[in-house]
Image (cartoon, rainbow, N blue to C red; front, top):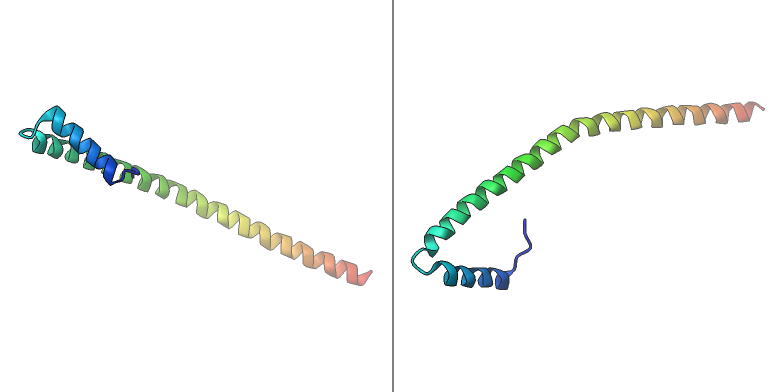
Length: 86
């Protein structure tokens, strides 16, 4: 989700250690982990619902495009037959 490397995580950990202190760091880490998990689940659910809504529309669009392609092919065949008759 985020592009955070080892050194960025290490720096965040060190800042939290200095700001919060070693006694409260596990409590804060648990709280942040719980909220990050909730936020991540929310975004996954949002992404899934958007994909479900757009999949129906995408299917309809593909059907229309395929119908148009078949009609174009039919017209091309009729044009070829008309040119051969001339």
